Amino acid sequence: MSAPVRTGGFPWPALLVLAGAIFSCTVSEFLPTGLLPDIARELNVSQAQVGLLVTIFAGTVVVSAAPLTALTRRYSRRALIVTVLLLFAASNLVAALAPDYTVLVVARVIAGLAHGVFWAVAGAYPVQLVTGAQLNKAIAVTNMGSTAAFVMGVPLGTALGQALGWRLAFASVAVTVAVLAVLVRLLLPPVEHRVPLRTGEIAIPVRRDPTLPAVVVVCVLTLLIMLGQHSFYTYIAPWLIEVPALDAAAVPTVLLLYGLAGAVGLLLAGTIGRRYPSGTFVGAIIVAGGAIVSLALTASWQWPVFVLALVWGATMGLLPTLLQTRLLRVASPRVRDVSSAFLTTSFNVGIGTGALAGAAVLEAGGAIAVPWPAAVLLALSAVVAFITDRRVMRGALR
Image (tube, rainbow, N blue to C red; front, side, top):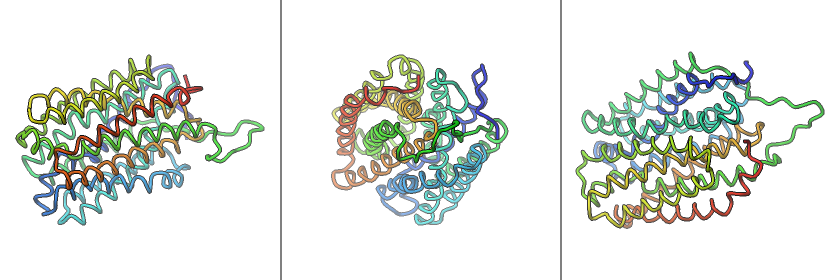
C-alpha cells in the first residue's frame, strides 16, 4: 500500500472522483424525500411510512458504521470504497424492482450498511491527500458532491420519478453509482491509513485518546443539527403541497433552489469558513433556524417559500463541511477513521430520529406543525455551539 499522497500540487482528480462518489451516495440516501407521495401511492402505504425509510436507512448506519469500520480497518481504503459503492448500486436496483414496502425496506437496510462504511472511509480520505493548510479546501471540494446531489441529483430524480415513475429514478441512481465505482478504482490513489508507532511509543486504546472529548462535542452538535434539519426536510414535499398549497410540480423547483443555495454555502465554507470558523459556524446555525421559523410564519403565502429556501439551503450547505472540517482538525491521526465513523453515526442518528420525530408530528398535528420542532432544535444547537466552541477548537490542527 502506498504512503499518503501529499505532493506539492492540489489533488483535483482524486478529490473530484470522491465528490462524485459522495454525490451518488447522497442522492441514494435522500431520493425517497422528493418521491414520498408517489411511492406511498403506488405501494399503498402512508406518507409517514415512506418517510420512515429515511429512519430505517439511518438506523442501519447507526448500528453498523462503527463496528464495520473497526472490522475493515486493515483493508485498502480505495478497495473498500469501490466495494461499498457496488453495494449501493445493488441496493438501488433492489429498490427499483421492489414489489412491496417490505422489499423496499430491505433495500434501504442494504444501502445503510454500505453508507456507514463509505462515509467513515471517504470522510477521512482528504486528510490523507493534502496538508493541513489545504484541508478546508479539500473537504469543500469533496462536499461539492453532496451539494450537487441537492442541486441536481434529488431535484432531477424527483422530476424523473414524477414523470416516468419512481422506480426508474432508483434504477438511474444504481447505474450512476456503478459508474462512479469504476472511476474510483481508476482515479483515486491508494493511501496508507494506519499510523505506525514511533520508537518507544506505547499504543493506547481509542477510548483513552486525549482528543476524544472534542470529537464527542462535534458529534453531539452534528446530531442536534441533523435532528432539527431532517424533522422538517424529510417532509418538505407534503408541507409544500399542503401548507403553502404549491402544485406538486413545483416541489422539484423548490428543491433545486435549496440545492443551488447549498452550492453557494459550500463555497463560503471554503473561504469565510476557513478565515472565521467560529463565527461562520454559529451564525449558520442561527440563520438556518431563522429561515425555518420564517417559513412557518409566512406559510399562508407562496412567494416567501422560494426566497427562504435559498437562505435555508445556503446555511445548510455550510454546516456539513464545517462539521467535518472541525472533526478532522481536532481528532488525532490514529482515531480519524473511527472518529469519521462516529461522525457518520451522529449524522444518521440525527437524520433517522429527525425523520421519525417529523413523522410523529405530521401524524399528530399535520404538515403545518412540522417546522416548529426543527426551529427549536436548531436554536438549542446554536447555544451548545457557542458555549463549547473555544474549548473544542483549542489545539486543533492548523
